[in-house]
Amino acid sequence: MTVTQEIYEAIVAGDQNAADRLVGEALAAGLPADTILGDGLVAGMAEVGRRFECGTYFVGDMMVSARAMKAGLARLRPALTVQDVKPVGKVVIGTVQGDLHDIGKNLVSVMLEGAGFQVTDLGVDVRPDKFVAAAREKGADLVALSALLTTTMTNMKGVITAVKKAEFERPVRVLVGGAAVTPEFAAQIGADGYASDAALAAARARELIGV
Ligand code: B1M
Image (cartoon, rainbow, N blue to C red; front, top):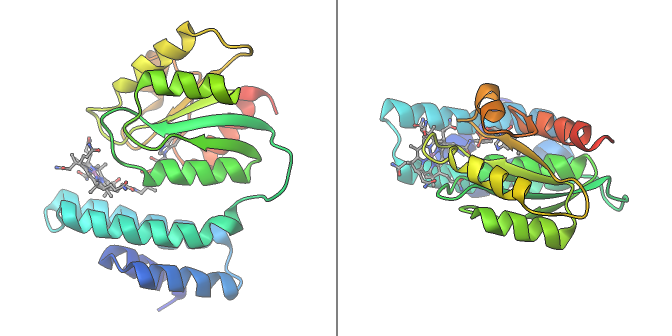
């Protein structure tokens, strides 16, 4: 079994110690960070979702796998981000109100940092007024919204309305994404941009602020 397969298995089994150790081993062996991420960590989480859908995994299983994913991602983070460079822009990011999923949002955060952004992460279940207050306080160029549930993605519209209504010193764009979100939905709610994955989110963020 390759080390990325072992990482995949560790995520599916929810073994956070193994996820942490194996990501360290893969990095030490010189494997590219995006291979470890895509073939190991993200593929493992996709399998967890599939098992939940089939009814062989339950919420508790998803929680232990999520913990293992976070451990692996924390170990991988330095390899995905750029250190000590002048930020190209400022982003405020969070998962919208009612939604507790944060793994994809954390990954988008890491990729934005990797693309040179200064990121303020507001966490999960974030109200529209908190996004606006943080964007003002931090002088953000971009507000990035994540939603994983069909029942919470509708809350993105409230954030967009609040951001568009607020008066900022410079233009603030809104980027949306997450498993439930589609480009059509993003356009319908008036988002400035949409991205289907974390790498594309970083690219789209740069395009939106013109860097
Ligand atoms: Co939840 N859950 N969950 N869950 N969970 C899903 C999302 C689900 C699809 C599972 C399923 O049925 N197959 C389903 C949603 C169905 C729907 O609405 N259509 C679901 C459900 C139903 C629920 C509960 C309602 C279950 C319950 O209690 N009965 C509940 C809701 C709680 C709440 O939020 N209020 C719930 C709870 C949980 C846990 C807490 C147990 C746990 C989350 C732990 C955590 O995040 N800390 C959990 C998990 C782990 C999942 C699955 C299995 C995995 C999500 C994940 O982390 N994926 C998920 C099934 C699945 O996605 N296959 C599922 C890995 C991650 C890297 O991908 O987050 O999609 P993702 O992020 C991607 C892209 O979407 C994108 O980039 C990322 C990577 O490239 N992206 C962006 C994300 N944000 C972006 C922002 C951008 C751009 C791109 O721009 C700003």
